Length: 455
Ligand SMILES: Nc1ncnc2c1ncn2[C@@H]1O[C@H](COP(=O)(O)OP(=O)(O)O)[C@@H](O)[C@H]1O
Ligand SMILES: [Mg+2]
Image (cartoon, rainbow, N blue to C red; front, side, top):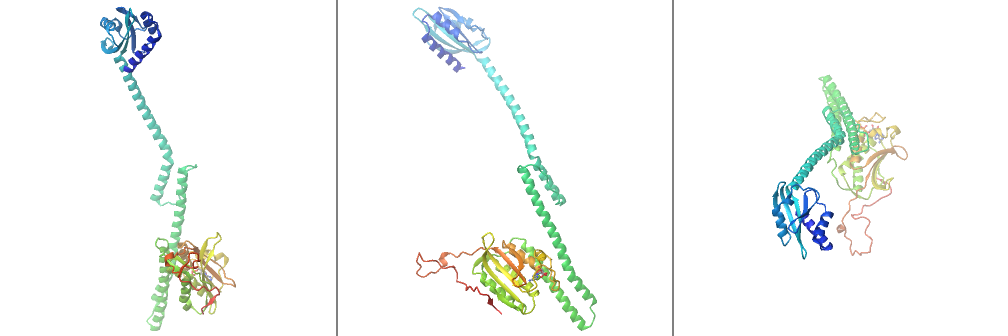
């Protein structure tokens, strides 16, 4: 309101500077060119009387207030003050003008109460509008969020249903290409894997049950039929002990396979491949009268589980012994090679001059409880499954191919994780910066590329 008054006063001053020096003309002219706002009114006084007022009738006839007119006629300097009127509080300003012969003034009045009422009304209207808008926006947000989250609710319900009913065959159907559809797809993939894992698990338990039942039946049958004859008894005890030993081996193998699926299966350590290869051969030589041979030894130190790798190689050698006869060749070897993608890998192999593995069996025989065509040396069919678990635990794989000259060649391939020996461990007498470093950072292994006859 004060700004309004100040503004009018400034305008009047500017106008007075350019207008005629005749006060009647000046005041009349100003009222003609200036229209007051809704809550304003202007009037002028001249020569002791009310002179002119704006055309529109003001909210209260303050122009007829004699006290105000007298005051307007008498003030020397511009001033503002408040008075009461029939339309409430009024703030006014008096701007006196004087010429040589005349004395007059412009009075600007603003109806304070009415103006305030309008502002209050406006604020109230705005508040109501804002509240309604807020409510509508909230409602819209809630509806939209519900729509967006509906597919997620579907995912949640399906997940609940599956966990309640253990029904792993159920899948989610969320069409589209958005994040929720991607979530549903991921969820379905997970269910695929779970379903497969459970099926494998179920088959495995079934097979294990069958496999263990056979020796149990045999043992029970023999014990039931056992007579009093000491020779008969000794025979039965030997047979039963044999069967129990077989069961024991199966249980051990099953435990190994179960462990292979848990973290901590491997105890990773610094392994010298050459030493590993040679020591496996030293252990297996007593298994039978065979021509034992070391094909090659890798001259590397790697991070691996020495015991598990030894176990895998021993399994392969035990199989080779079973499938060969006296004097036949069994060879083991290790090497660092480049795979098809050019990465450096470790290869560990066992080959024999036996009958080999039929093409159609080459994948199958690595499965659990899977035995090949030759039924004469019957194990439980877990050996190669263990070999595969060990290879996979090392990030590698195992496969069987034809041995050159007949027989089977089993090769374990796994990524090379070489042990880097810090330079500080190197003792290079009188080392010269430009001199090439020795090829290996640890005591050099004698590398013998020619096949080395051990027996
Ligand atoms: N060196 C080999 N030569 C030929 N066949 C083999 C050889 N090693 C394994 N096999 C075949 O693979 C099958 C699975 O082997 P494995 O998992 O060790 O079970 P198991 O020795 O108990 O039969 C064997 O039954 C055999 O038919
Ligand atoms: Mg075996």
